[in-house]
Length: 77
Length: 249
Image (cartoon, each protein chain N blue to C red):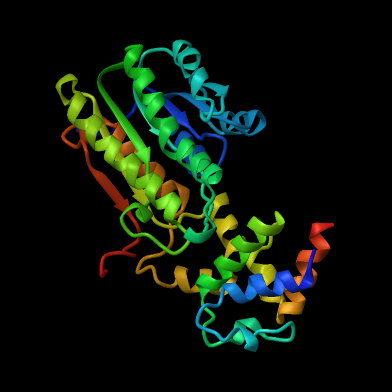
């Protein structure tokens, strides 16, 4: 999977946040815009684009965008 | 007077009987004297449900309601019925912008098309005796939607509208149709929800209930009431079971 495309897909879910502020080091749940809706959006995004299940508990464990990328990558196989 | 609450002598079809609300409904209806025909997708789990029931000649049929083309055959094999407890259903959250047509159709098919076609077939084959009662499990989400639940809420709202129409069309034959709209009930769907959202989110949701979240028996007792002669004046209604969740909204 393409790392840069993944980052762009994550950025697209945060419509009120300047894209430049979202990098692999970003603690995405600490973005001002973050809400329970974003948890749903990220889970649905990963299901739609990568066809792998990610749970709410997985999201709890992921702190940065990099963490999330690694979680998805390990499941894409 | 109390005999009106009994289900003795009534033959009831229960769908979704292999787990969750459907399984508990089967157990409760059987304890109240009903003779049951239980359908569900999983044969082993259906057997397990049967083993929980007091002996009364209950039957089970492994059947996936999604296979609507096979409904005529299923219904042809049924004895005359006094009621239906439709508990089969699926839940899958998805924000609107990620909805896909196939997933939407799958959800609508099981939650709406399947119960409608099952009911139509029961009527076509004259399987419902006068005085019958049809009970469909809806959801509080039909009237009180939540983020990510567009497909689910829409499917249950459609089911409620269907049930009301049925109530009108069959009142003349003294056949009643009602829905039960529960809020969060502790079933396998509850665990799925926990996996989808976070535990924190669920704790916040659970604490919003003035009474408490539901257990399957809360729903089963309501189904039993609507199937019994005690509810003989109730048709076309939606009974909300929510521990007070939506009272103040």
